[in-house]
Image 1: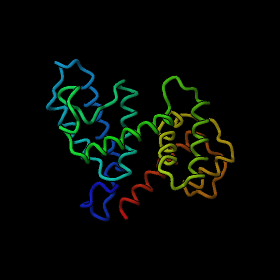
Image 2: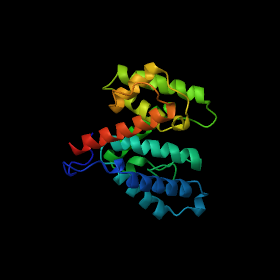
Image 3: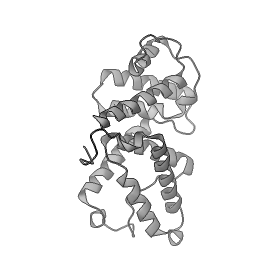
Image 4: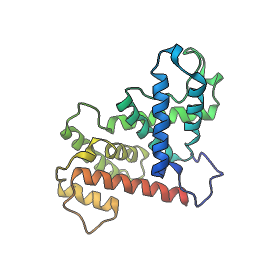
Length: 213
């Protein structure tokens, strides 16, 4: 699903740029803030503009996963999941307000969020439960290298609380981490947190290279 055929061949997906990703999260926080207010206190015009600008940032397949990660983070800290397809009335038909392409993107994002929600750390989860998901995500990624779901699962876990975990990672999984990151010489000595951060950077760099190809 190449969402923007006008993108220059050598340009990177915009969301792989850290500054742009931070701006995306700022937009999502703004949307969540407006939507969490009582109806009469919402500035609907501003809300529509914020949502339109945010949707316009999704130009590549890789952007969908990064957007969903950002939406889950905003939901966790702001306690409100941003809705990028608001309507004036709750009962209003979405098809009367948005194009078919926008609704396809909506369905894709909703399905991706469901997949990532299974992998992302949730408040109250123990570190051990997160470690187990991380190990499961590594094995799934290696067993199904071409699977979008296994890719999103691994990315989701790496973007969660596992990044703060300094417990040593078993050697079997350390070898997998080294292979993903491309550091064949380093197959031992990883912590869960360092492994998660390294994998996250590697996956984003891979997305960047694909977008530039």
